[in-house]
Image 1 (cartoon, helix red, strand yellow):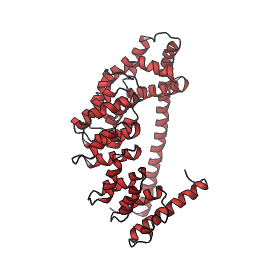
Image 2 (cartoon, one colour):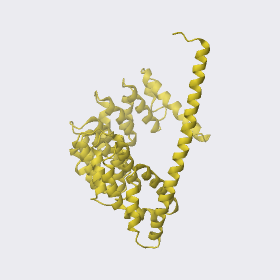
Image 3 (cartoon, helix red, strand yellow):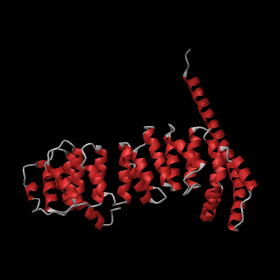
Image 4 (tube, one colour):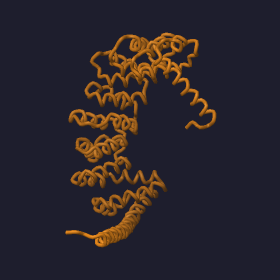
Length: 373
């Protein structure tokens, strides 16, 4: 069958017209859906406002409205409308809304059981709302908490991450520990950066959480250990001795060691001076440890640190030379002190120092001209 040019043009025009009709239909459909959503939101908002008015007047909320809301919110589209209505109410009086949400914990407990029977997307959305609403704040046991712990072991990373966020927002350190133990025991991969950032969002007593995590530190795999060290790096200087003991053990995981060395870049600890000096001056195949040591040693200002950095400048690894030159620059060493490198035979070391000098001059000039962020 041969199609001539004229027929081909007609087919093309037909396809274009069909696509146009389809797009117009989609536009009208979305407008209709949005209109329905706004109507649902307004209906739910009216119910919520009645309850908020009771709370503002220090009166008990109406059980019948709560029962009605519980029945409505089992449908995801109405749960989304509830979310929209609550967000609007938060803008007016957050404290009253938060009290209402806490008093609605029984409704959400029932919904938690129902949403566990739905697909991963809806489970993840429900977990997100729990992290936003904080309905179990400062509680150790609840149906909702148990549901969040069940979501930890699902295959969906979205469910797991939102469930963790909910547990962080509830502010009970024992529940966070239980979640990490589950991840460890079930050998679930959850990136250490997500874990570290999540721990930092914990809304309870961070020092108590730190103490509890350290108590169970050796029970966790290396990814979780790295996340814990990063958490401690941000919140506490009380673990210098413990981390140093862990650092000098030969069987400690390398990634954990790297995180610990960074910890001592923020919290100065005298025994680390010798550790960093030895890392930079002794022959070793662990270039990652040497590179991070070259960066951290700038915290420990001494002639020994400078000499160690000078030696590191001759290392064959680019990253080690880069960090060493950056540290020497940060220590504000002048030309005379580094003459052995500038006038030496190692061209790579000299070029790296010159590069860092130029980089620093550009930064200073940009700051003076108001161009730096």
